[in-house]
Image 1: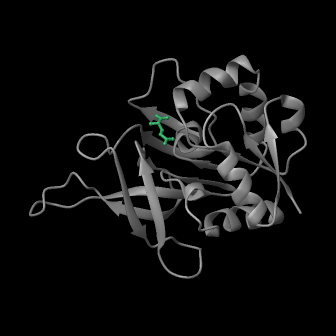
Image 2: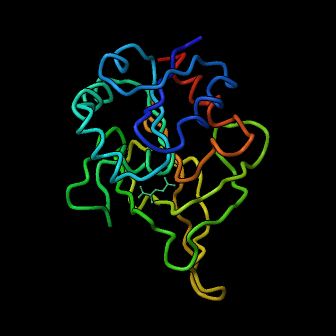
Length: 204
Ligand code: GLN
């Protein structure tokens, strides 16, 4: 079984651990550089990206993690994790740090104007068995994606007027071995996104 770390500074750590174990990985909480060095892939959970960014600095994980991801460590970020993996964040804090790994610009709390949290059933590229139930909690969206980024899922913008122009918002992406979802697959019973990631870790 591949060893898949879960960044355990803050956020939905236990949920990811349980999903990874169910998806055939050995899940390892990661709080120190030495623990990071032992894993074949890493999950960045949902939570609060500004807090996580600060804790990454406090725990001296920011640089090691940047290097590991630049060096090809497979990574999966959900929600706040997606924000951390992005090259750039809009509506972030000025001192918020980015890990890189995804050539995307994300907008933080993007769905926050009318709908803080919502659920939707979304077709998701690369997972078998039909749409995925997606739970969005003060979620970001991907505002811009580079040419090397594959869009895995989109959702109609809930703020669009019913009779006006509609915009589909990008809410899941993959670039090489880095995957990110604006929603939280870890809080459903559906292990398919985690299986997809564990498969990427196996192949890497
Ligand atoms: N709004 C949070 C942030 O900016 C993300 C929310 C989440 O992870 N559920 O980090």
